[in-house]
Structure formats: C-alpha cells, structure tokens
Image 1 (cartoon, one colour):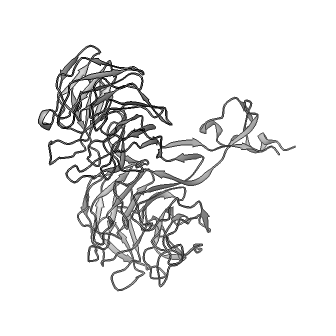
Image 2: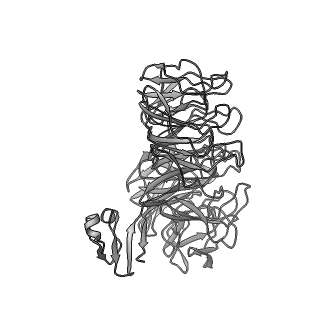
Image 3: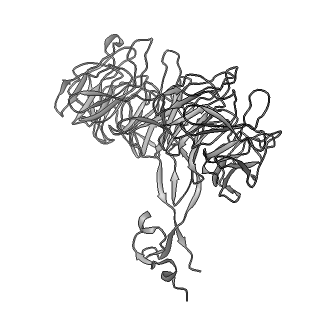
Length: 621
C-alpha cells in the first residue's frame, strides 16, 4: 500500500472546514462534514481588471501586472495620438503624467516608476526621441540612432538598460538592435531577420522577440543574451501586433495578435518555458495592438487595443492556486416607473435598496430586495434631487426640488420601512444636494439654492435639529457623497451653476468638523451615483459634460481613502440616478436617464473583484 506521508512528508488531515492557502499548500485533507478528500490545484486563466479610462490602441505598456503603465497610442481617429498615460494598481487605472510628444507604435520597457518609451509614429512622421517616466512625470532621454516605429522591446528593460529591436524606419523592416544605458543608445548585434510589430519580454541581457511581420506574419522566436540573438522553437501560430511579456529569454507569454487569415483578430495565448511554446487559456476577447506588462508567463496583463473597435478592457493572465473573479456589473430588476434625480447619495444595499421621488416630481417609494422592486408608501412631499441617508428601513431625504423648475426645499423626511414622517427642516433650502450618514446623524452638503446658486454649506442633523458646520472647500452642485457624519467623502459635481457648468472630479473628506481636500477622480462628472465609505467608496457613472447633453459615461471609479482607480464599467451610460448604495464589493444603481436623455427604470448590480482558492474534490476511485 502506498504511504502518502512518506512520499509528500505530510499526513492527510481530518478537518471540518477547508484549509486556507498557507495550510493547504501541498496538502490533501479530508473534510469530515462533506465526507470528501480535498486539495488545492493550480489554475491558469484570464480575469477582468478595471477598464482603462480611455479606449486606446497602438499604445505602449510597461511595468508589472500589479503596477502597470499605459502611455501614448491612438484614441480612435486617424491622427488622434495621445500624450496621456494611465497607471494600473492591479485592480484599476488612474491618470498619470503627460508625455511631450503624441505618437503611437512606441517601444517601451521598465517598471511603472522607472519606464522608458522610444521611437514611434504620428501624426505624420517617425520619431527617434526617448522619454523616461519616473512614476509622476516624463522627461527627455537620448535619441535613437534613427527614427523607427513598431520596434520590439524587452518589457522589463527600463531607464538604464533599454533594448529595442527591428521596426520600420520608413524604408521597410530592419533587423537593427539598440541598447540604452540611461543616457544614450548604441547599435549592437542585429537580429537574424528583419521584423516589425513583434512581441517581446525579458531584460537587456536576457530577452525574447517573437512573432511579428517579416515578409509575412511569422512564427519566428528568438532570444538575446546581451550579445547575440539565437533561434528558439517557433510559435504554434503565426501572428503580428501581439501582446508580449515575460521575465527572461526562458520565460515568455504572447497574448492575442493579428493574422491576415480568418479570424484575423486572435484570442490565442501561448507561453514559452525555455524549451517550447504551448497553448494556454484564450483571451476573453480577440485583441491586437494592445498594451502589455508583466514579470512572467504566470503573471501578465494586457489592456486596450483593437478588436477591431478600440477597447478599454483589461485582462490579467495568472497561473496560481487562486481563482480571481474580476469586478462586474449585471442587470437587476427594473423599477416599475421611469424617473430620475431621486437623490444624489448612498441609500441601502444591493439586496435592500430604496428609490424615491424623481423627475417629474413624484412622491413614490420603491424597495429593492436584490431581485425586484416593490411599491411602498409615498413621501409626504414629492421631490427630486434631495440628499439621502441611511439603510432601507431607516432612510431619510433632505432638500431637493419640490416642484418643477427651480424650487429648492428645506423639507426633511425619514422612512422607517413602512411610512414616511416629516422632521425638522434644513437651515438652507437647496437642491442637487449630497448626503451621508444616518437619520439620527445626517450630513447634507453642497447643492444649489434659489437661482441655481452653488452652495458650499454643510449641515449636520443630530436626531433633533440641523446645525450649520464648516463649509466645503469648493462649493458644488450635482455632487455625490457617502460615509458617515464624522467620516464622509464628497466627490464630483459642478462648481458653477446655472450653465455653463464646470464639472470637476474634486474629492473632499469630512471628519465631523471640517473638510480637507483629497485626490480628485480621474474624470470629473456630476449627477453620479455613490456607494461605500470614506475609505472605500464607489463613484458610479454620471455626466461629465452638462454643456453638451447628453454626455453620460459608464465609467466607474473606486476609492481607497487616498486615490481613485477605475473599476468595471456599467453596461449602460447613465446619470441622475434615482437610487444607489451598497459597498465597494456589492452595490446597485437604479433609475436615472440614458444617453438619449430619456428616463429609465434600469437597475445594475455591482460585484467587486474577488479571489478564492481553487479547492477541488479528490477522487478516491
């Protein structure tokens, strides 16, 4: 009989709950509750990360899977080159510094805080310039010996040890290879063949180049040891414009790409282990001309690109014992009547939500159970655009418009799960006011008073009366808020009203006494939804441009108490929500108006990114 303990050095444990990662590694156990043998198994596959802030292709990527960088590229139009960069933290994207020269097909490498970008094309010329990024800003480096675009590059080779190969100087493909020492570029031994649009990975002294276009799309794969190039086993499928990453000449990954054959845009993924290329789980979406980053074939990320439309998607490739499920939005039950502007704040949860009031001005109230909405008691005073507070069974709303047009109110009402009752009035009448807290510890801030005048006033409610507190640093209307009375966060909105509006991404914290400024959202917007707390908030869609309506967005951002990053986008661009709430792991957004300006009763439900051990049942047969 085989002795399991003698072979692996561990006995089979008997437990009543499954083991965690540290305990379960290399361990088979018996779950006495389920009567099954269990083990943790490595799994390979893609998960979805937060979308880029902009849809972009032919851009450059650098960094790690958990600290990536996207820079330069095309935003869709023939000459729509960008100078902007975006930074990835392993979950979502935020704005980085701006480069000096807009271009695409730029070669790149290095970590997020010490990256290098060189060559490229656009809008009508090839470039030989180099730009270095320190995690905050770009600065100029030494020029390439000649202008080239579509070069291959070593993804981990950064500011002091860059590597570029192949490309097109305007006269066709070349085999030239160049190295960067932090100051200047020098020609070294050329590749075995001329090539462009190849994938690459590794460092200046241990690099790979694979795929690309020679006289046709190719399966070629070569490695570089810091002096010479040598052939390695070929790819299984010829392609160009691929997403490539890897740690060294012995470890690479190629994701997607393009081939003239059908289908032309590819989902195929291959990994190199130092001996051969092998097929891996495929990309969720066929993509080419994307950015890419990563340290190995076990931890890579690809973002943006063409499919053939320009994308903002982010896909992470992992080989680990954890199954990662990306954040996502899913369709929920529709509110029976279509209204908007029912409250700009956070009320309830994904399984216990509340929507009330709306435009045109109504008093209807609906409760959400995570599946469907139920009509319940009307408010005493119909309204729209009031501040909102609390959970489903102890909710409140203050201010808002109580009739059509500009009619800012001071009325405060609370809901106990079955009926509404009126409480003490706000001190300052206003609409489009943000709220946070509960019905016994409420906070109302910002908004617009008579004549649509922007307000910076803050008021607190203690369960008996409202009192004036320190003002916002930047008065705003149409902003959002969440958190508690002593730990609130307010974001977005417009600093001017009536139009023309100045929509901003400003973020402020309230500590129960005063407001302090924090980092702004990547995209300013108003009439957005909110969920969460001061240190874990969700900014949901909204309108970034009231001067040219409708201009709704579906972009959502997540906040960690210090900075914002993108997360999964809603399926539908929406603004003026009637009800939003929950947490950064489970939220909902309902009602509002669509991109045509029409009211909608749609509900979408948000589930945050999660990670779980890949525990499997071991067969005893």
